[in-house]
Amino acid sequence: MSRSIVSSSFIDVLRGVVASTSTEPTELERCARDWSWPSLYAAAQGEVTLPDLVVRPGGDEEVAAALRTATEHGVPVVPRGGGSGVMGAAVPHHGGVVLDLGDMDRVIEIDDVSLTATVEAGLNGRDFERILNERGLSFPHYPASVEWASVGGYVAARGSGVLSSRYGKIEDQLLSLRVVTPTGEVIDTVPVPRHAVGPELTQLFVGSEGTLGVITRATVRLIPLPEHRRFEAVSLPSLRAGVDALRVVMQRGLRPAIVRYYDAEASSGSLSPVVGRTLSEPIALLMFEGERGVAEAEADAALRLLAEHGGERLEPELASTWWDRRYDFYHPPHYPTLPAMWGTIDAVAGYDRILGVYDAVREALGQFADTGLRLRTHFSHWYEWGTMVYPRFLIPDTSGHPDPPGLYKSIWKAGVKAILSAGGVINDHHGVGSTLAPFIERQWGPAFGTLLALKQALDPANVMNPGKLGFPVDGR
Image 1 (cartoon, rainbow, N blue to C red):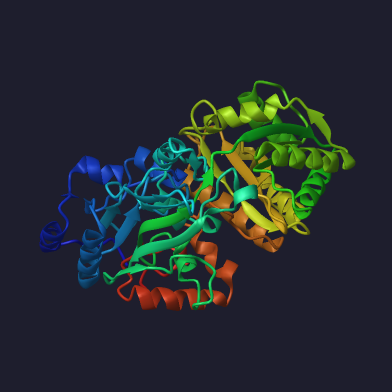
Image 2 (cartoon, rainbow, N blue to C red; image 1 turned 180 degrees about the vertical axis):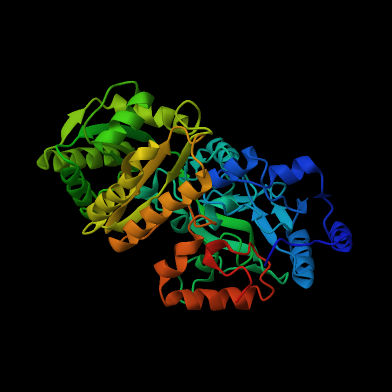
């Protein structure tokens, strides 16, 4: 599918079925990018691909009408939540319609007995948490993007938050979905997960990034606001010692709400400026929460295990300060701006391979040292079977480089090749978008054909976010 050519008659039809439809330049420009570096760079260069129009549906029926119309006319549709993704999933590379769900932001129901909530997909994450906190509840999904992202975006990108080691990723916190298919059917998945009434249809749409339909409603599980939180910080004698120690913590059944483990460079370059202390060794930050007695017992047990691996307890304020300032990482001066270049080539693997993945990415990105590339890495999102390694690269100034977009692609290609060669999976929770799309078929192997068959069955006209998730742009 090349750049879509949208007729005035199509726009007229769409205006007849969706009340809020705009072709205003400011609206088109707002919806032409997300937080991915390539889209920010293109916008700064005046080279963005604009959608032809932006529609803001007010409910499921308007979403359905818009998708039916787009399918009938073969016009691409890019669903948009908060626009906070960093992989280009919300960028309308082929023009067409951006379906902005921002007006679908109602809380449908909060069930204080079952501790569940049903909300529309456009609800902002921070607004949702504020509403819950007023009732003594919490939705324990705290991504870095919480002040911008939407609940639907959490699901569509298969996101994760800093509390994942205790509560899991978004798929673990999700009970059911309402989805509008590309041909305009409004469907609800089974209201509770993991029961023997056939395949788990809910999970088909988790991580689908708007390529299989539009998520319009989600039912999620809640928790009471924790009675108690305990913070701890521990230095480790080596990177391997720390990974081994934290593996044992998870495999013994302990569940810290937060486990973040910084290598020496990240402790010095990323953590130190935020906590206000010079640090130079591998450091683990932990937080335990829940009933006071249980949280204290878990913390004491974890500290004993870490000490057995050479861990030394530091002042807990390092972890509590990080918690209080955790969103500072995503604002200047801690978060870079153009003409810098940045990205996170994260990967996940079992404990038997994760340090090999770590070493492989560092070696692969070392070839770009002459560009000024810096690499700072931590491990987070820990599971019984493995963990995620989070290598974040930064080139402070690319204004003198002849081809920054080409350089960006080369860095990602080298990092992804290293991850796959070391037996890792190329992403844990940022999604695929357009950045990782070229590598998805290799990651999936023969199973990609099954995924492609599902795409073709649900979206026969190939109008839903074409080219994302590695699907062919022309639908074949």
